[in-house]
Image 1 (cartoon, rainbow, N blue to C red):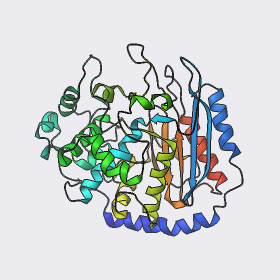
Image 2 (image 1 turned 30 degrees about the vertical axis):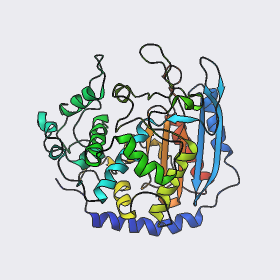
Image 3 (image 1 turned 135 degrees about the horizontal axis):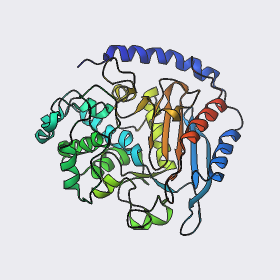
Image 4 (image 1 turned 90 degrees about the vertical axis):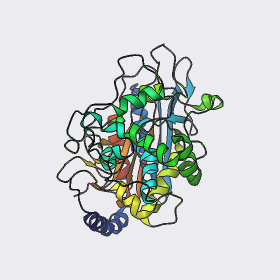
Length: 387
């Protein structure tokens, strides 16, 4: 299977680097992000989410932050605050699991184009022998979106068994299908190669180096009052401090595809450190610049038009959080419970949105909010639509 060459990616990066000076030179932030705040207020008032925390970073610092609405509306209303902790949902995938894998790649302990079955022979069943680490990272593995959830199974061992024995729905490398199974397997790979539980590996190798003191898996009960609740589980219990994703929840709360809890301050630290590393500035980001470039540039099979980095979304039907003015080489990810992070190295900017839009009973959408806030933020930074 052929992939775009590394040389070409660096050529593209070089081209983007030329554009950086042009974009930043014309990026003159306005004195007001009123349009961003108005969008948040309208979305909350329309009932699409109880509240939202928005952070806009630019040129090495936070240039705007806005907190509006409620942290909880049932059983009692609670005001939203800057230090509210949120279920990051699938933001766990690129920020923690993919980064963990790429640290191991950087150390020479695993290769991107090695077969997953080299590490887990039982995974080769049902035609999965040709799936590589790269195909898992880019969601081109051919696996279905999730393991079966239509029966009342529980326990990590059963979740692992279902991931290992999953059938294919497409030939490996043929089609982009976003799949939690991909990242369940990547989380298991991190555990196998490191000899540590995934949550412990992440703490030691990502959270601690970045100073993300308010982030982690399985939050303690003492944090419950400042954690945004999500929604009722199957037994009618409001999930608060317990991961919303049903597969991760059944597996004990720690999995490669979901499970991280964090807040706006910590996620801003992460985004800024990532940008600093990409831009060649001093940074605590626990990965080399050239490895991070691989993560944030197209790595999908040659000829495929759904563009994915190694963990990060670049240009697919999930890319609405880019908005209309951030560059086509920007990247990001969303989380089902209502989180999103979009990063644009060309303009040295990021937009972080944290919500618990599924509270209290699901059914709400912040897709338009993500798009519109990114567009308004970019315009406030002085950007215009990319050519």
